[in-house]
Image 1 (cartoon, rainbow, N blue to C red):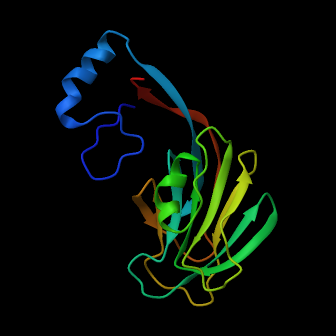
Image 2 (image 1 turned 30 degrees about the vertical axis):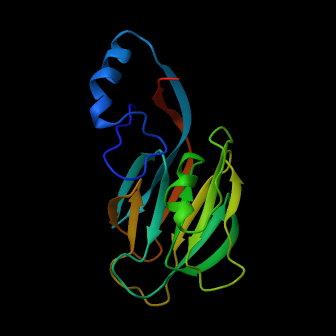
Length: 185
């Protein structure tokens, strides 16, 4: 991936629009390096259908347009980590620790650390804090509402995938694929 900064932020973006011709020349002549970044693989059930996707930054489940919090369970392997009442949850890669997770109050993780970051979004308890987990684990996020409402959104790298229903869940593991970022030195 060669990132082109078209906005205000850009931790992973290697060039600006005005520098694109020069960047493409460097690519053609092989004057670049590739930086590997861990990715996430999410699979599960969403709106009654099977989904599978890969993420460079994060997988999130949020309340969407609703003004009310949602209830979710987070498991590491088969162990319940917490029952969250919050605006949502973000599970990020180290690359994603500087994206949505950072905005939700999470720490920044060095890009070469092999881990996941589980971060509640505006939790309704003082004890719900970001948790760093081994990338060797399988993390499951399950909707667990007493009264279900519409609009609970599953997103991958900031892109809406679908609306989740009560008791649906997704599993996140380390993807077998790495993101390859073009770097010019």
